[in-house]
Structure formats: C-alpha cells, structure tokens
Length: 222
Image (cartoon, rainbow, N blue to C red):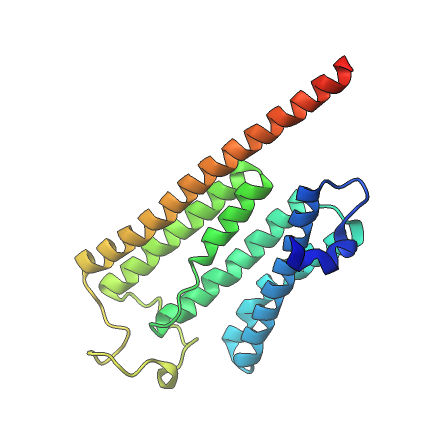
C-alpha cells in the first residue's frame, strides 16, 4: 500500500512478497493506532477504576509491534494472544458503555475476527471470539430484561450516568421480548458478517495454495 510505503523498511525482509509486506505494514499501523486509542482512553478516565480496563489492549498492541519490529516476522501465536487481550479490553469497555447507555465496543470483535481469518490463525481463535461475544450479548440482554445488578457494581457513579431515563435507577429494564429481540438482531449481524468473511478468506487461501502448488510444479518441470 502506498500510504504505508514509508514504514516498509521497518518490517519488510528482502525475500518477502508484496502481499506479506503489506500485511506487516498494516499490522504495525494497526498496533500503533490501537495502542494510541487505549492510551487516550486511560488518560480520559485517569483516577478511575475503568482506566485500568485499557491495560490488556495496550499490552496486546505493544506485544505485536515489538515482536514485528524485532523479528520482521508475523508470529501467529503472538498475534492470537494479542487479539485475546484486546478482546478483553473491548468487553470491559462495552460493560462501562452499557452502564451509561453510551458507546458499545463489542462490534470491535468483528475486526478481530477479520484479522483471524485474513491471517489464517487457528480455527480455535474464531470459535473462542464468536463464543465470547455471543455469551456476552446474552448476559447483557438478561441484565436489560430483569436488572439483576451487572450495571450496579460501582464502576460508574450515579453522576456519570446519562440523565435521560424514565426510571429511578437507570439504565431501566426493557422487558424480555424487547431485550432479546434487539440482542438477536445484533447476534445475527455479527454471525452473518463472520460467515461471509470466513467464506471469502477460505476461498482466498485455497487459491493462494493452488497458485503456490502450480509455481512449484512449474519449477520442477523446468
């Protein structure tokens, strides 16, 4: 990618094909951007417990960037661990956002799954991510339905809560039907995106393997 060309020398090796160089550039930029977002979150919530929620994500981004710069190689085990750490931060952020009826960060798992599929990480990574998001959405739906205390643990003070509510102890219960219908829609979008992205990534990997096999066969014949 032209926009990333100035940093190619940081991660590229002489024998890397263009596609591998592009992958490394995007991973380095993604780690830098993600790390910056986590730092800004911490600074914006300094002095509060929720400022600690960015630590797993920061560790994950730094882990990928340092390993990539040190070895100039894409280590799938390191990347997989970093995705789990960033996912942990996303769930914690989503928790605090839900308490305030504010920004929900669970859709970030869509990006994590895309990375898993494009880099061709082990299938367990996609299974774990899909399971975590599905279970988390069901848990938050149950809290919206009956208000059993998930949003009342003291991380968010009453002064921080949004002011537009229609009950004494916000966020207010919405009932089983509305809560689970909304959650079912979110899960459907999440799973469909995963299905179509996986199909594309699988086909792309197969074509890549066929091309490599054809090149090897041609070299042997020659």
